[in-house]
Image 1 (tube, rainbow, N blue to C red):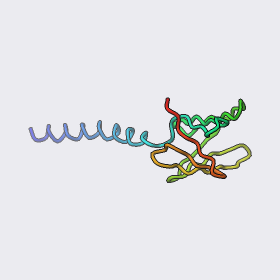
Image 2: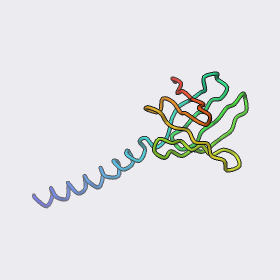
Image 3: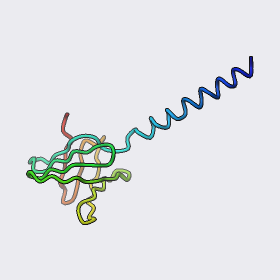
Length: 106
């Protein structure tokens, strides 16, 4: 009887451990949502997979981004990277020259 319980616990652990790893790995790995500047000139749509779509007055670019602490690094064309500071619970992004992008409600 004791052997069956040990096997049952091990089997349960083998099933639960990968599920926990998948759940934790998927949490908080990126931004998700739409951010715009105050005048509505530029809009960024972020996906949690590290990609973003920037729309500036009708010109659309696909971008990649990474997050390092409270910094968002946007990879622009030509290998140039723009760095934004993530504020609060990602409610705002503050970028070069103080440009602030605010999260829009979906």
